[in-house]
Image (tube, rainbow, N blue to C red):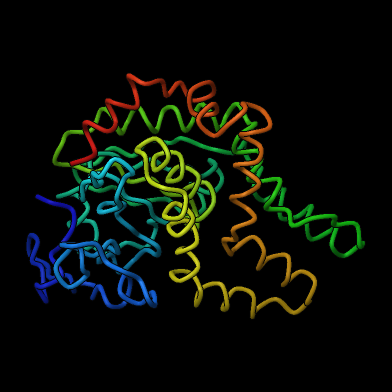
Length: 297
């Protein structure tokens, strides 16, 4: 069963539940002055935002154009925030469409906010950070900001670590292998807590490997802010100390400079973004072509 729903259909039934379709005008169609290529207007194509009520920022990467004129298939690559609160209807929807869920969080995060079992779907743990690493980054940043010694937004260093960390590298290599091993009618879904940084970097790697242009890659990365805005305001609004609130906001939003930092680190260490994919992740021509054969049409 295909992962996405057609935008023309007001409802989609699966098993004994009914999930409301997300109107494309609320997602893809709201960007002003965007020119839609022939045959890809949001009123005639599937929505990338999936109708999952119990999770935020659940998006299919299908439909993005590559520089050689092909497009990513819908129903193969899905990025998301944590799935702890998915409803029974959500679980049924995912069970029909997802092959593997790759959890990029730490063991501590998984224990505190576990993903409920979903029938027929493997849940694999692929941590990007060491145990407690993300929490330690936040604690250190708040302390440094309070002392006036915070030299740069802490997420810049976090994004560099995606490139330099051996654990992150192993995780992204394993995620790519799961993508290559998935059946052609099922998706690989990967997520962290907010579906922003660890998840966003995985999306960036796959989009680059598939030949999507840089502008589109940044757009997808920054779209997280639209999906998390209300949640971020609620979290930050509960923090009394303005310094701590500012630091916390910097961890919860996606900024172009964060992704710039990752790309700059790739170029500094490997000569180019392509060099990072080839040398660190083992994405040579053969493996990249295998990805494109499986995921593009």
